[in-house]
Length: 424
Image 1: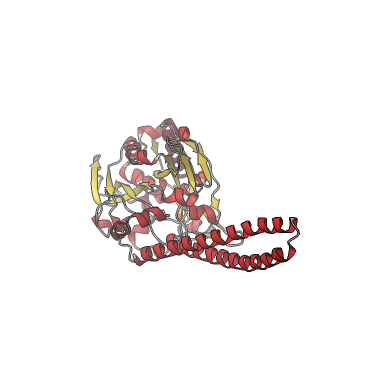
Image 2: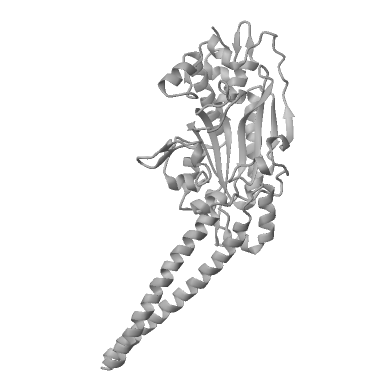
């Protein structure tokens, strides 16, 4: 959530930055300023009247002590009318603060000055491309055929158990999935990230804290009886560890990693992009999250991008890094880099990671603060990245490494999988 002080200090600049994200309701900025002015005025009226009541209450005590009951009774009548005013001001204040908060949460995060201009994914900027695209045989198969031939994943039984988009991994397919997640976690913990196993359902406050609510209700599965949400990413529960928390400056940066299943309705998805593992409703992902000092967050963002890049390099996959343009960014992000790997059988790039700096957008919602060097309380910055999302990594690995003798396993994964290739 944007801070009111930021909005009021330069509303024209805020509107300009929101335009980079193609946010249309910029008139909300003016509404927020008016509401905050009303809030301040009402607060002053409330405080002034309450002070009069407090002073009069003391005076009544003195008058009663000297036996001046008539004057005391008259003053009591005035106090009674002031109390009615205070109650009215308090009700107005509650209503204004609610409306102010409801308006604030409609605003996305401001994009960084580094964010490229653009509206669609085609306008994202290719920052780097590396690795060698494999040349496959003419009879090479896409992953949705490979998983059938090698009996790795069963979509039909998954659909019978739950529904379309809920794959059932089995045998070597399940073991390969487990090998990937274990390798990713070990890679992250070796870099200083502390591992967590979070709850896979969160309450409304947690979903609000990281910006899923009120922006993404339609994309999350909602357990209505308990008002819990199935997590779309481990970022949500792990970041919320520090909701309503004052962290010590010496504890920063806080580096966390977590494996979790992820649940996304992906409403409206259709076409070739959703075939096989390209887009599913339940998938596994390993996440990295950092809570840092504000002045270091962009340096940390670069470090996290380099970390994910090394992980993808260790899998021997061709990849590219994209700086997302304003129109393709998430609601909460200030700057995002996407990683895509090349799928040789599909002849297309597949997104496998997003690494983002949220600045103080999430920490303001969560009230995650620390005392700076001057002893003043301020919001920390939060960042997160996929390290990595498994389905498309899985797809690219088996497609790019298919041979007549089997599917070759990258050297880094062989100790986790237990052998050099997947065989029929």
